Structure formats: C-alpha cells, structure tokens
Image (cartoon, rainbow, N blue to C red; front, side, top):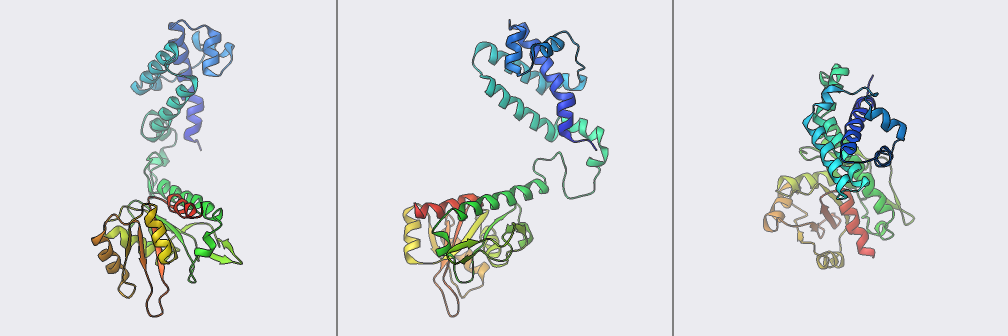
Length: 299
C-alpha cells in the first residue's frame, strides 16, 4: 500500500527543492539564504546544489513543475513574493499534480489497482462522488456547530422538528441529500442533534430541497423552522426574498408554482392548513450559509 502523499515526500519534494535551490543559487542567493527560504538545513542545500540527492526525471521534465520553480525563484529574488506566498503556490501545484498530473501518474504506476478499481470514485479525480459526499457531510457538520452556538435556534424549532440538509451537485433523490438522522429537537431549551450527518435520512426537508432544485433553484442547502409573520419580515429586511406556497398542494407542484413567480427566492413558507403546522424553509448555497443566516437573526 502506497499513498500519493508518500510520493510527494519521497519523489516530489527532493526533486522540487533541488531545482528551486539551483534556481535561487543562479540568482545570487547564498546557501544560507536558500536554506532559510526552503526551511531546510544548509547542509541539505549543499547536497541539493551538488547533486547528491536523487531526483525523479519525470518530475523534472514536467512543464508545470519547471514553470513553478522559475516563478518562485524569480518572485523570491525580486522580493515580489514572500516565503509564505511561495509555499502556498507550491501547495496548490502539488494538489493539482495529485489530481491529474505527474503525481497521479506515478501513483497509478505504483498502485495500478487504484485506477482499475471498479467503484464509484476515482482517487485522482477531485470532483469524484466520494469527495463530494465527504464535503457535503463536513459542510452539514459545520452548519450544525453554528446552530448549536445560536441561542435562539431551539425556540425556532417547530413541533415536527427541524433538519439541516445539503445535497450533492447532481442530486436526484433523497439518497443524494445529507442531513441529520431523525430530527433536530429542542429539549429543555437546548438543541439536540441525534446523530452524525448521513445520506438518505431526511424525508420531508430533503424533498423540499429537491423540489426547489427541480424548479430551477441552484441552492444546495435548506433548514426548516417555525413560521411567523415577524420572521418573514425580518428575513426580508435582511435581503431575502420570501414567497408563500400552498400547504395543501403536492409539495413538488407547490414549490414549483412559488418559484415560478419568484425564482430568486431564498425563503419559502406555508402559513398552515388543516392539521398542517406552519413552516418556513431558508435556502442557501451550503449548510453553513443557511445556519449563519439564522444566527444573524439573534445578533
């Protein structure tokens, strides 16, 4: 078993550092100055400069790597780039090479079963479903932490409970929506989160989100809270567009009709019906955005 990060340490960094050390020396840097910029010892710089460190030819010949070396060396030499900025540029390059460049190729050679794996994701694909799923779960976790630190949120939870959900970019069913298993409840005035975010655990709130997206909304997250005229007024004052939908109609059609009138809406609500509790849904690009909007109501 070999991780791509091992290739970064064993193959990329020695090659990259040696190339950058050479480029800096060519621009008049002393070995001590090179050591300071690279964050390594002077003796290590001496090994790099004198060719005492094995270098990966494939990495050396990669145009993106050579362009990065020239960019960093020139920026550091002219003072137009700080060491921190150079480090950030190097980190970005490494991640790109891991996702579809020379590091991905070297990893595929070292572990051929990775790319031939007959699963739902590609390890070197930054937009793979596995990564998107992990991002969505992490996003809902961040949103929940915000709600847990929002003193007024438990009082906004309706009798049927709340849920905070976020969907995958290509979501089609509730299995593509991550939320809290069960419901968010107020217990003695405190928010209770029954479990870790999972996919396919929200029925109603996930269905509302999917209905909104089917009707043209590009929002990927929503949370439901108790409806009140005062809340709608406050959200409107904060820049949201609020639209009422028919509580007695099928949810898909009701949401579609509401968004047909106001496609830019970020608040959808129904004011109740026979045996139906009034509920408001707040939409946003992700779970933390939605949760933050609720927290700002108490500030």
